[in-house]
Amino acid sequence: MADRSVPNATGLTGWRKSSYSNEDGGDCLEVVDDHPSGIPVRDSKTPHGPALLLPCSAWSSFVRGVRSGTLRP
Image 1 (cartoon, rainbow, N blue to C red):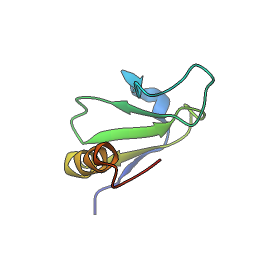
Image 2: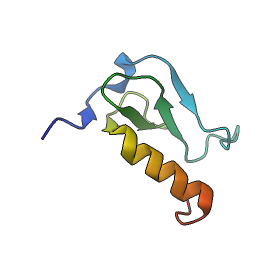
Image 3: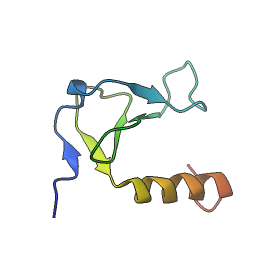
Image 4: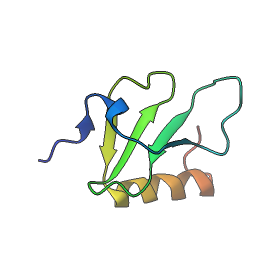
């Protein structure tokens, strides 16, 4: 099985927060678009920590679930 994490996420550029994030610094996910190995996802509170590297299909399923209300934050 391929490694599905990035131990130090600061080495990646292009992180973006959800458009639903607020300025209070709440619980936010950040992602990098167009990464060649999948979708890196990290907790915005720990930018120097690890990031999960999700397959594109898994990220798409997650986003569909949140948008449809099947998955709730």
